[in-house]
Length: 358
Ligand code: HEC
Ligand code: HEC
Image 1 (tube, rainbow, N blue to C red):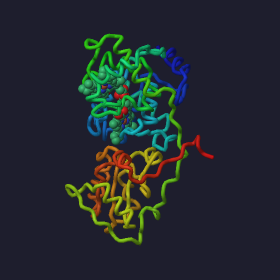
Image 2: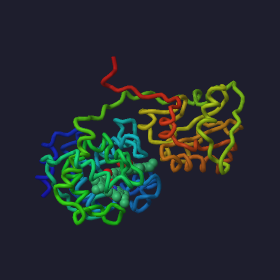
Image 3: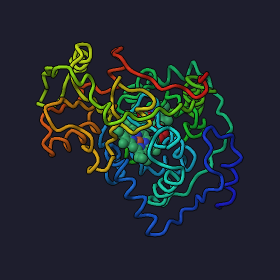
């Protein structure tokens, strides 16, 4: 069982290469299971929940569903955790993307996820599904938009038109999810509701949203030094009107930047997300950082510290809660989060693609 699966993985044309020599057998011992569990709790439970049940924050899906695990293991799981999904709270965790985890860590995590639910990986094959994309669009709009959004951007369910997702999800993976659904989640099986051809048409439509796209690794930027943390150190304090004593509107933060006010902005997402795009001057302070290190270089005076994430609140709340517990007075969370901030056309600094480097 194990050898053919490994062979198949190594033969596939991979977008992001899983180390082919990796041991993908589901035979982790107690010690390895405990190590993976600790990693999961530190990095993933914030959104996917302590028991992998999903929907703890940001509509993060369940990581227990058998139909997902058995078809996503190992490649799609590896790619998703390594590179994340564009425009969502799911960021990449691989060191190569600027995140905290090595390939070996990620392989341990996916083996643990699969072994916890005792799944048997299903080999779906690479053959493409043939269908009529125009028909598919109509059927999609009748059956899927309420959860996945008009353009597949995701509302309460994952963004299935996401470029990173479609670059590693095969046609058969998509079809399997639609035919079988995801037990224990709002994603029902459509096998009784739609004919096989109709499902093929939807797959063709989804595929037409993105084909041939590949993620481009970034040139990793240096993290700011502690003496660069305070923006406008000589400026005066901004005036913020906090909602619920905690949430500051994005436009007040922009105003503070424009008025050269003194403040610190913390990006609480994984380091990879900061690499991709961040608010100018923002300091990476990932939510998963060891608590003893979060306040290490942050002045505990009246300097305003505002934190943000994509979520828009889960990761930034957790960092701000910690700072408040240490007695930091002027702390806040940017209410809209960075995805909304970008949508609003507010200033950002983007990373440079490795390929575009001159
Ligand atoms: C009632 C809400 C709802 C509807 C309607 C719905 N879905 Fe889903 N869908 C979900 C949720 C929630 C998930 C994630 C489930 C989980 O936690 O694993 C999902 C997952 C998926 C996935 C897997 C995505 C991934 O990241 O692996 C695909 C593909 C998908 N849906 C396609 C469709 C299509 C096509 C339709 C219409 C025929 C549809 N869905 C209708 C809620 C819905
Ligand atoms: C800040 C919240 C957040 C954190 C932390 C997070 N995720 Fe996610 N994750 C999400 C969201 C939101 C999605 C759905 C993305 C989309 O719309 O496609 C997702 C999707 C996924 C998927 C795809 C599931 C599917 O049905 O296709 C996997 C696998 C996953 N995450 C694993 C992880 C692992 C492992 C970690 C820890 C290393 C992690 N995530 C940390 C929010 C998060």
